[in-house]
Image (cartoon, rainbow, N blue to C red):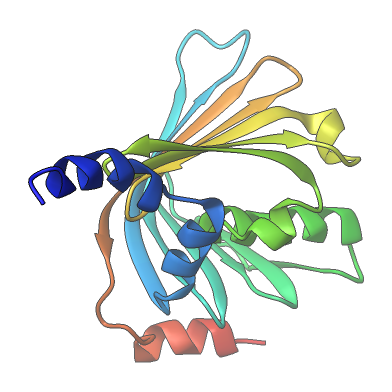
Length: 201
């Protein structure tokens, strides 16, 4: 019996190894996730990175809200039907699958990134998932379909209980870093204002 704890010590890393399916089930179990974002774009030829920040919301059954607060206000809504973008109080621009199918395909993919949805991601990327221990993980996405393979060299995701960082490396040698923090799971339903935004035609 004295060897049982030692045996469990050796077995536990294999028993508890985190998989991509585990991660997706974890994310899918949260109906609404809210977080703060800090975004940094490093562009060749520009002496300083471009920085922005704000708040995001991803709702399992509705879509994604991306509310930039600085350096200027910008609101973005993504759902199954459309992308709606309003910059600095200007009238919103609406893009649908009918008007711009290629752009809409990419925006639909963004939702899959934030949900770490392996079924959707595997249609467009080679997936390299790694369990980093203590609940931490990384996921490297290498594009396998056009036009994504013409735009990105890779996309790197990392986190623990939540998605914490996204790095987009493009073919021009530029990089976009998104850091997510201050995750909140409550309220577990949309507020009245959030429902109104998704309901807006």
